[in-house]
Amino acid sequence: AAAAQFQHLLGEKRGAGERVAVVQLTRPKARNALCDELMAELSEALDALERDPGVRAIVLTGSEKAFAAGADIKEMQHRTFQECYGGNFLGHWNRLASVQKPVIAAVNGYALGGGCELAMMCDIIYAGEKAQFGQPEILLGTIPGSGGTQRLTRAVGKSLAMEMILTGERISAQEAKLAGLVSKVCPVEKLLDEAISCGEKIARHSKLVVAMAKEAVNGAFELSLTEGNRLEKRLFHSTFATEDRKEGMSAFVEKRKAKFKDH
Image 1 (spheres, rainbow, N blue to C red):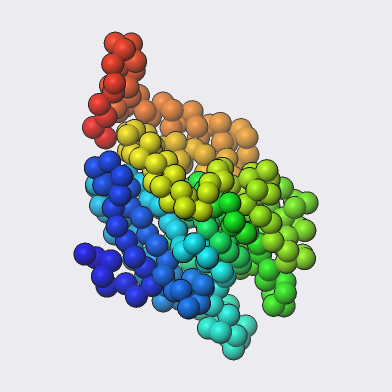
Image 2: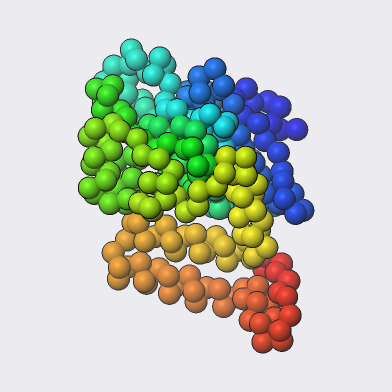
């Protein structure tokens, strides 16, 4: 019902127990180009899903032709340096990266510029076999501005990131899989179901412990190995304060299926 208020998004709950929320970008005439209004709607939708206790995982997708073909160039064409710097342009676009619940990107078609950056803010990327990834901002006389230079380099390494960003050339879904940017390549028609299936697998586990695991993995991108290991140990120790850790280990020893209650 809440999705009815959005102009550029569609939403539904899928999977067993409807615990997986699917959010679809819908600006078909612009190949889902990311305008300010769309990104504001996405932030609002993510806030609502964070508050929804029934949602255990989120799938973000676009159309078969485009996940998102980039930022809306017409919208930013006439901006000045003063407007960008003074207003922290694109600053609010990072909301997706701070979502506590797991987010899976289901990418078909183009994921270019801001679209590639949006996919990389997700925790897991599944790609349709015809998907294309790229950071072509150099062709427009600018550079990525929403994490592209940072997340792409961490995902695929310096050499490939430099090549993509300095030439503006795209890579295929298969190349993205080999480079470590995506975890799975699927037939176009099966992509969304595969992403939902992944969300369902995550939804079976303790919501608390899933959040801890996500925090630990994200820490690997921000911290030194020593600090990262220290964070992991703290979070690991923290699981021993939960009923779900007791239940999980008891179920294993007793050779039965665990029944997690998020406590």
